[in-house]
Length: 364
Ligand SMILES: C[S@@+](CC[C@H](N)C(=O)[O-])C[C@H]1O[C@@H](n2cnc3c(N)ncnc32)[C@H](O)[C@@H]1O
Image (cartoon, rainbow, N blue to C red; front, top):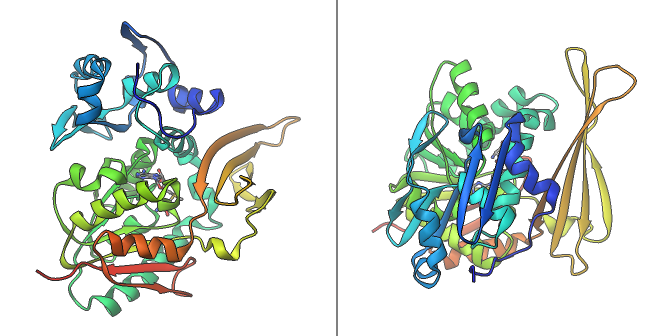
């Protein structure tokens, strides 16, 4: 028996997104007796997944998979090899993506989130009316908060959900030494290209924020996760695990800064449409909008992002991406940050486009 999967199985469209991202053609078959990957563009399929020591001990099939993950694979120009880090086995996810489709395994919600952001990466900037202006505006707002709460003491920043770099690029331009990681390798590729286009390089890699310390293995002055990234973790236990890893990544006296949607201000019922307006690039018109469908208890919702790409012909392309969010209240996030060890946890309103939560790791 495979270990029971936590969370739901993604629908076929979502799982297909994992293996067909960016036009890569991939075919894999997974059986209980072995894995036969036939991946024409293996490097396109990359994820950070892990098995815990207990799961490996209990399930010999996992050991079998691990043996097949030994070949190093590269993402964003960085060679990665599966390895033990403490009691966690950290593996490139190209084969695990196949497992996700065919057999239950211990990776919970991260696969569908990864597929969502991998598909969205080339279009992510369209969420903003002017992405470049937003990079500058957000960096300015974050810099003011940082200087106010940690005067002159923040030089190194770890962005554990950097995506295509909306905050990481702006903070780097302001002189911070920024390290970024994200679940989506396609988003990391975009961030890498955007940094190069601006004439600097960022230390970027693919990692799940729930294993941020296991991945980075060092401490920073400040750990950030902006634009509601933490709400992709669907349970309090997952959030606490991530916050504990943020804490481990924070040097004593340093801090944590997250920005989140204020779900208490949202109608958390039924089905809602959230349009972004029209975006135009060259001759192409894009119409992005989201559909939110709340579960009956109002705690979780399924989000579908539709992006209509209209080049002026008789028909147009529609990209469809699906993910889930936990409509977690800010008070609950603050209490989980405190449980993880952060002190002086506080909420700031009207400083960024979203409420900001700050915490400090005590000295010594
Ligand atoms: C709304 S985007 C924000 C990205 C970036 N901060 C920005 O503003 O452009 C949310 C990001 O969280 C990342 N994410 C979601 N779950 C994650 C996880 N478990 N570990 C690391 N990153 C994750 C997604 O891949 C995505 O890039």
